Structure formats: C-alpha cells, structure tokens
Length: 479
Image (cartoon, rainbow, N blue to C red; front, side, top):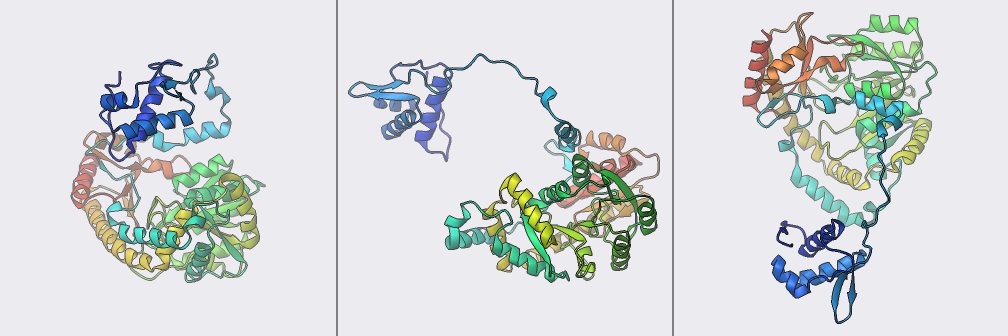
C-alpha cells in the first residue's frame, strides 16, 4: 500500500495526498475506524514533507473521511462519504429521451465525422489560426479589467450583458451603417446560442423558414430542433437566386428567413450590394422577418465594406442581426450578440435569463477591454494579410489540381468546390482519408438532401506545405 502514489507537478502536494487517501478509503483499501499511519510515517512512505501530510489529514477530517483521537492519532471515519450505497438498478435512459434529444444526437455530425489522426491533413476546420492570436494584449486586457472591477466581474452578471460592451457594440454596428434608433443588443454565448434563443422565441404560425441552399449546417440543425420546416433557395454567383426566392414566397407563407450575406457558409460568396437591396425589398413586400448571420464580415481581403442587410432595413425593425467575433478573434471567448427591435430584445433577455442567467461577465469584459484598446484593428490587419495569402494559395492549388465544375469563395476561411453531377464526394473523402487527407463533404450543408458532389475546404489552420500536398492528393484522387 502507498507505493502507487505519484506526485503531479503544479498541484499542491497536500491536496494530492488528501485525494489519494480518499481514493483508498472509497475503494475499501482503508476500512472504517482503521487507524491511519502517523503523519511522520506517511511522510516517509510517500516521500513528502510532514507538514503536507498534516494538512492532508486536516482536509480529510473537514470532508468527513477521517477523525482524530487526541493522543492516539487519526482514524478512518466509520461511514465515510460514498461508503454506503443503496442497492443499484440500471435505467434505460434511451427509452426516457424525448424527441428533441434523439434528433439532436442524429444531427450531431461531430460524433459521426472522421477523426483526424495525428499527421492527417485536415481541411475540415474554419476556426481561426491560434498562432495568430494576440496573447500579450489579451493578457493585458484581462489584467487591466480585473484591476478596475475584478470583484464585480467574478460575481453574477446581467442577462442582457455587460453594459460597456453593449455600448461599444452599438457604436460598432452604427459604423456599419445600422440605424440604431429603436434597436437594442443582447449578449449571448456566441452565434449558436443567439440563434437558438431567437428561434425558440418565434411563433410557429406557419412552421416554416426560408434560407439559402446550401447553408450553415449549425443553422439547419437548430432550425430542425426548433421544429421548423426548411425551404432552401439556390445560390447564384453573387448570392441567393431572387427569382426562385420570389416564386417560393408566392407559393407559401414563412415565419422568417435566415440569410448569410457575407462569406456565406459554405460557399464563401459575398452577396452584392445591389442584390442586398433587392432582397430586402422582396422580404418587405412579403412581410417576412429576416435573421441575418453576420458571419466573417470582417475578413474582407479586397474592396470596400459591404453593409449588412440590417443597414439596408433603415429605420425598420424587420431584421434580427446575429454577430460574433468567433471566426475573427478568439472562439474561446464565447461572446456573440443579437441586435434587434427593442421590444424583441426585452423578451429575448427573459428567455436568456431563464436558460443560462448570463454570458460570462469575465469573457465579456476581456473582449470589451481588448476592443477599447484598439487592438481589433491591428489584429485584423495581420490576420487579413495571412488569411489572404493562404486563400490565394489554396485557390491556386484548387485551380491547378482539382477537376471541379465550379469553385466559389470570395475570402474568409474556406472555399467551396463543386464536381460534375453524379460525382460522390463521400467516396472521395473515404479514399482521401486512407491517404491522410480529410475535408468536409458538402451534402451536410444542403436543405434538400443534395450536394453529394460538393466539398468545403477550410484552410485557416493548415500549413502552406500541407495545403499544397493535401489539395494535390484530393485532385489526383478525384481524377
């Protein structure tokens, strides 16, 4: 006994001893009322200081695992926590799951996707490259904010969000051309929570939503989980097909629309300013509210900024804008926002409070301080230059190697490749996987079961050498 004790660097020794002794007691290695080794004896056996053992024994007493007898030493508690169990029985939890949970698991592609073994060239991610992260200024922002109001930040926050950040984002969106009068902001745990909160709050009068086809897989998943039927509209080179959209609007009524106008996921297309204006006129004519996904708006590599749909709505309140810096800055800070009509935000705030109480105030404050210090602009300049270089390299490699029929992506962190009709990219994926290369099969982004001849190539976290090598393998295997 006691020979299997091993210290772990960086963790207080007395806590490791206490946890080790607890383990022995719970597993029956030490019995109730059994005398424990003296502090001097145990310190010798474990090769630790006696003071560490004394502190560990005190902790065992506090936790109800031991008791001390004056002049005699320490003993294992007669009935330590976890020593008495009620006769167990096995529950069939699968039979107790509701339809929502079952569907969530069915739609969870992360559980069914191909795992990237060590050495695999993976084009599946469209997350930012962590090597670009501005760690020094993030640390500085954390220390600066903690020094100002650390006690407040570690307590409960407000469901609506951290006010300094909300005020900053209002000005930020105003600079994008958004009319902020009559609108407000709710802070969320990234895009996904914001989208889910909005969908859960909307009535299902018609039970249907219209969107681009293909579209963001996470959006498809959440639309289905919230009970909406999805009608997908084909994409053209400059965005959604407006003729097809109007035809669908004439045929049935929709509760809302979901659009990704900038660096569309998965096609990478940026909707033209002219088409944005025509789209909003169409949605106004048919009185369909719009949920706009402000995906990757900041990652433009050339040309001027294209105003979001909510800016085209002017003083109207028919657009709900979902924003996030996750694909630009730091996904680990789960901070996004919903910008919408004041009365709607008031209701969404109550939904948010009932679900998660509030988004981490600490995360919000760090992001606010980082933005306030002007670091976003400097970081974006560096990030855009690096991602543009990778984008151009990936684009050229695709043109040189892959036998595609269409290739799209105006920037951002990915390209979308379409092969000839009848080509099966699931078969291609399996063959490439055997050669150490994986990508995202495009069928998961389609609302109607199509897209078996498409793939998405995410390049943000792939080295130049692997981009060249991986795309050459994809092209050769496809041919």
